[in-house]
Every structure is written in C-alpha cells, then in structure tokens.
Image (cartoon, helix red, strand yellow):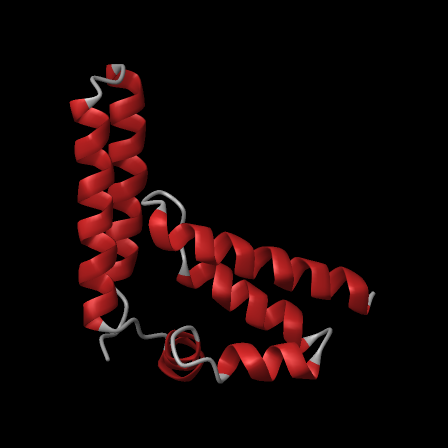
Length: 117
C-alpha cells in the first residue's frame, strides 16, 4: 500500500509543477495531496516536500490555518485572468468560455475566501 501512496504523491508533485505554468491546473492543491500521500508512504519524501523552500510554506500555511498567502492569491488570480483572456482571444465557442469562466470564478471565490497570511 505504501507504493500506491508514493506513486500518488509523485504524480501529485508532477501535476503541481505542471500547474505552475498551466493556468487551469491548480498547483497548491496537488502539493497538499502530495504531502498527504507522502505522509503515508515515505518519511523522506514527506520531509523533503514540507521543508522545500518553494513548495513547503504553502503546505505549512494550509496545515496550520487553512490560509493562502496574499501574493499566491494574486498570482493565481492573474494566471486565471490570463488563461481566460487567451481563450477569448482564440475565439473559443461560447459554451466553452462560459464553462471556463464558471470554473475559474468558483476557484477564485474559494481562493479569496480563505484566511490570508
């Protein structure tokens, strides 16, 4: 079972890293999932992730207070706006734009209603 959790953690880290550059793919939730999986599979991987200079602080903030740091909220919002703007510029079908806008608005609402660090 530990192997299953380790693979889940590794895949979550990979998706989190990809999410750094893809506006619709969340980053921090994948790192939170990776921390959860690694805690059940590998003390070394878990310690590496929660002590990582870039990925560790958002995990600690979330675990301690459920908070998201304001610069991260701003960056996430800007990436969502950029992603949606690209979709509008590409003249995607209206139903796709409506669906994308709905999802991004929901994510932004969630992000901005979390406690701030």
